[in-house]
Length: 94
Image: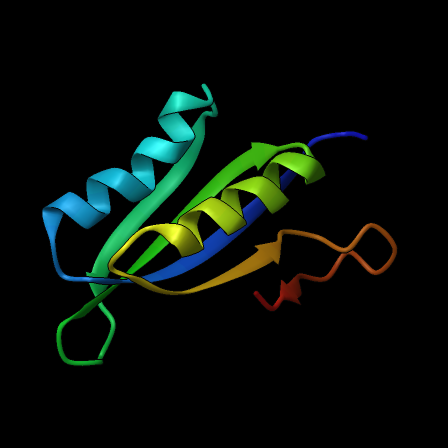
């Protein structure tokens, strides 16, 4: 299957250790991060990390599952940049 660009939204505890573990998943797999922002989520004690990268669909499934296993990650959502048919962004709940 071809690679797709997705944006992951990850809510995590405000801790540099948690942030490093989350971004390290991408680095260890040699995936190029195209965009990364981290800011206050509006929830007390949580950051919202928005990360955009390109990977194969099977890699996205594995990355999302591993992100959820990191202690301090509270929620993960993924968005495919464009729907192949409608060319509109699609939300992937997860």
